[in-house]
Length: 146
Length: 146
DNA sequence: TCTTGACATAAAGTTAGGTTTAGGTGTTAT
DNA sequence: ATAACACCTAAACCTAACTTTATGTCAAGA
Image 1 (cartoon, each protein chain N blue to C red):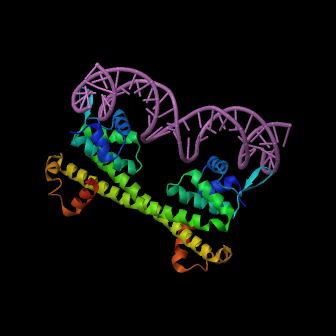
Image 2: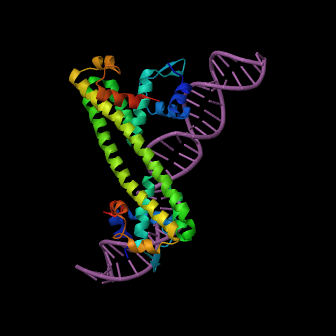
Image 3: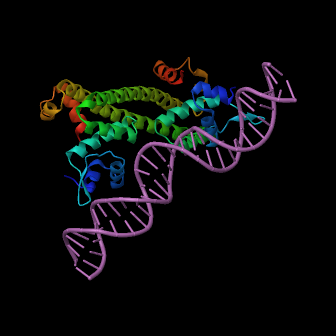
């Protein structure tokens, strides 16, 4: 059993955030002794899931929904699995997008290192995109299409 | 030259968002003819950079700062390069985090597919974490440490 | 005893990034 | 000439996810 202060330290989250999550129904099985919250292993795992689902872009109200399914029991296993599978797709798509973003960042890093060497952008403006070095050209094309 | 409506279609952004970006100073060189915004290649590239930098987590006010540096000329090449290098680190760190998130999602997907087969979580609760299949075990450990 | 520190609540405040609304201009199809 | 569009502005509004504030309880140490 942990106090709210201990959990705050463990997860590096403000106490106010934990109280907010509780108020929003994210710890439906949280017990109290004379008003004081008692976080058990159950709430610790819930917090790991909360942090995971938040990272996937899920909103608090939908995380609350998930927590309700957990209490409903075995009849919601399929729903819960589908949720995780959906969020997995979301994250995979997000990683793909971030890799496209990295292409733009790599191109711009190269661009400015060349501009620093030249002292201006004249030469660069003339070689874009056909005379770009091959390694940079693909990053340029990837980040400038659509 | 493009109208705001054409740019809205090209980037799949609401017209109101483009006006908002303009108001926030993200198109410092945008010209107008009798009050109507004229988006040129310059603003199109600016928008590509805006979308890129937003994806890296940069705030509008910092993107505005970058746009000001662009106008200042060659004296800001180094600052601009450093910005892109920083954002590149941010994105690489974010991809690492998302991969950890994927570990949790993979574990949970596996967990619920097993729970569906069993009809309950009894067996699962007893095999965590030591008797987990190896492929799942690493995902579990990865997403349950720290 | 008194004050410090951890816990509690309810309600108001904050922030970023837009979006909506209300009112107006100018051009083009019927 | 009138209606439908695409454009314009300023200002109010919105939302999610917290955070802060004001107020109070309770246990332990000086």
